[in-house]
Image (cartoon, rainbow, N blue to C red; front, side, top):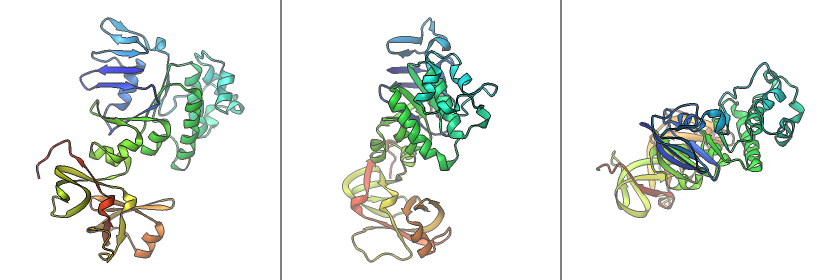
Length: 334
């Protein structure tokens, strides 16, 4: 499926033959994109096509009810006066009972939506969308309404459902983990235009911008390369594994960085950056520590042992072989 959209703020083409995640900064046009495809918003111009059928173009504007779009809204938009089966049966083209069984929630058929948990409400919203027998499923931040403790497990369940149904999907999300769980292709947009697309691994290893790097959880530091050394604006020298020249971004994964209170004597780590800890965030068995422009990922035990907290001076160290560089598209001067 190809979805060309042209508007004063949007100029993209999405191939969603594979499950696709749409990501970007706030205001980039992600939710607007979904609404344009669904027909809930009317573009200023251009065209929208699906499987060779034009939904919008010169003299054509197929109404939303004829586009066969399944839409799962961020707040799920369930009908509070209907029970679960009543919600799923609304404008259904497929057997609602069978759809509930497919999602493993047939036991909730006669429950009121107000009595459901967040994960259950999400599954009901997906069931209602699938019951319309859509040729395309749009999910607008389907996990945003869930608490952090359940998002990962519900994401895994949702990914399994989408794989079973084989309905092409476009999912808007702010999470790299969720994007890679729910989609094979990740499309990054900014101000209505595609800035990068590829698999999650491709975005992780070759982010095209600071936003993409931040989204994928990779450190992205601008500098100027001269062979195997990158000069940062503050005069710091970064040793890299591969030689380069000109404006570049230094990429280093947080888990490749070690922290110490004094410069380490281990000569295998050529890169050392001294700075004050700005933030510490413990997430399960890992702790993310912000030091200047870098984020390191260490164990909570290391945080406690070293007494790491905001305001403490530490040294962030990593190997040249763990450092990659990519050209900076802005072509900024040194």
